[in-house]
Structures are given as C-alpha cells and as structure tokens.
Length: 435
Image (tube, rainbow, N blue to C red; front, side, top):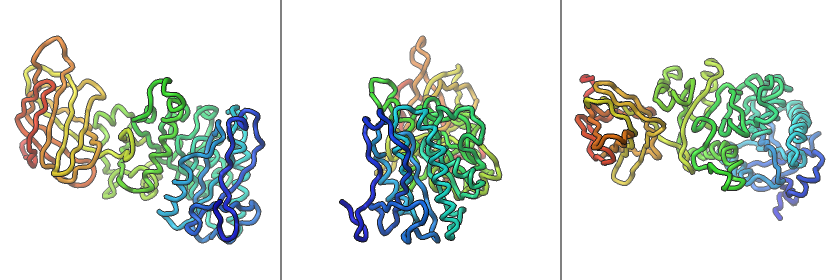
C-alpha cells in the first residue's frame, strides 16, 4: 500500500460487474494529486480544501464517464502523471464511479446532475478560499464532458477551460445548450469528436471542435463485432489517447478549419491565414495558445487524420499534379519520401482521383511520420480503370508543399507513371515562375 506523509494513499473506487448489475448509490470522491504526491491520491473533504491543495496554483479536474464494468480507467494514472510533469499544478480526479457503474445507462445519466452539483459546491469553496476560477481546467470524458458543462454553467462560464473528450451522445443529442456542454460554459471550450456516429455527438459543442479522421471511424479500431468489446469502445476511447499523447508533446498535430471532412481530404482547406504567424491550431492540450483567435472566429469544425497507433500525428503536405495524358485517367496515388535514415509514406485513396490533361489536381498528402530532409521520393499510380490494359499517367509537374512551416516546395517534371509501378527520383526546388 502506498503511503503519503504517514497516511495511506486513497485510490479510485474499484468495482466490478456485480456492482453494475445490482446498482450502487452515488458517492463523489475527490482525489488530489500534486508533484509531491503524483502517484498517491489524497481524499479531500468537500467542505474544507486541505493544505496540500495550493490555491495559488492552477487546478485541473479529470472527470470520467460511464463505467459499465465498474473498473478504474486504465488511462487515468498515466494522465495524472503527465499533467503534473507538464505543469506544476493541482490535479483532482473526480471519482463518481459509484454513480457511473451501472448497466442502466439512463440512471447513470441522471446521476450527472448530482455529480455536477457536488463539484460546483467544492469549486465555490475553493473560490472562497482564494482560488481563481479562470485558473481551473476541467477535462471531461464522455458523460464527464457534460458534467463539466453543467458545472461551468452553474459558475456562469467563469471557469478558464473545459476540454470535452468525445462528449456522450445518447440522451444528449439534439438537446438545448443548457442540457449539455456548450461554448458558454467556460472562457474556452475545446472538444474532440471520435465516435460521432455511435457513442459521441456529431454537432459542434465548443469554441473549437476537433474531428480526427472525420470524427467517426478511427484508424486502427476494429470494424466488425467479431473483435468483441473493442468494437464498441475503441473509437470512443480514442479521444482520450489522442489528448493524452498531446501532453507528451512528442510531435504536433495541426488541425485545419473546414466545412466538411470531404473538403478537407480534397485539400480545399489548407489556408491558415486567419491565424497569422501562428498558423493553424495545434490539436490537444496546447490549443489554448490559439484561444483568442478561436473565440473571435466563432464555433467551427477542425479536421486532421491520424496513424492507427501511437505516435498518432501525421505530417501534412499538399500534392499538386498537372497531367498531360491524352485521355482522362482515374486512380489513386501513393507517395514516399526518403532521407538517409528515415522514410515516410502517404496513401491518397479516399476516392478515385481524376487526372485530366493540363488540369492541376490538388491532393492532401498525409505522411505517417516526419522526414526532415527529403533526399529522394517515389510515386506509384494505381489505375481504377480495369477494362483497358497498360494504363499510364503522364505528369507534367508534381509539386509537394509542406503545410506546416515555410519549407520550400519540392518538384519533379515530366514523369511517366505506369500502373502499379513505383517510380523513384530526386526532387528539385520548384520553378514557380513556370506555372
């Protein structure tokens, strides 16, 4: 058993499926973690914050969601540690597992209001003892996102930030703002949608709403029910793992404002001029740096794609191809980049591409990793026309422009791409004056 300052550590309530069947009575427990006790929770009284809760520091609340099996979330302890490594703060785990562990989802939903009321009262006590509401960040997962919204509304939107990780959809879809998370609940509300066609919500809820991989089917998640429970929860939980990875800052994921995911995939939304020198927002914990611009611009959707496992971040390029074949060619493109010790691949196959003579086709090329110095490239064309043999795509110019940073675009001129044949070449700086 862990011990902190002579006291046994308090841990998240560990229940099982039996509790979920018979039901439990709501009991909200607040577990405090600081850099001095990052692996040992301190159970706090709701009426009097303990001395370890330094109210001059910022405070982050983590609020879990529906727990149908009653077990503690496996991502919880790592997230606490990573938040404390990132910032000297108070991290409070809101353990309402005795209200969330129940196979009756509708009963759990009813418990969200009572949980929010409990948490609101505690935060008001913090404020009375000198805490600034602007320094509070609430991270709510699934139902926890709406609990955060209820608390924020009760406090008149004075909380500094609410992050909603795939806010729960069932019983909240189509509800008015006062019955779910919405942008007025905090000074800044950022939301991640990863399962909008099942357990999450489709509509925007914050000042910025991220839709990884379009917001529904996540890369690497099972697509059939034969995979068991992972089929139901993988997309929903991906929001947590994407956000958690942003805490480590091993790589950055830029997100692009766009009306639809289809337009994003067609490279129609690569302009980040509204954000000036900062460029388009970085997804995750660090997006607060774009707060002023995002609040000014108003509610909108932002898209990005991910790899199927960690590290999830991709590197974004725009690929422009000018064809000069006599007949229109239809197909797909795979492009690779190489340096001395690195390689990266982008497959552009979200739809059949149309390559017409002297027409520039703009594509979004998202590479699975970052190659800092590109020494050579390769391109493979896959024709989608099966009735005629020996399909060829004649390329007058191929231009590859990185969307992040100010790297000079790379080009190659006069290429003949045969169906399924990989062509390797050394790129050269683009002769922009020619086009």
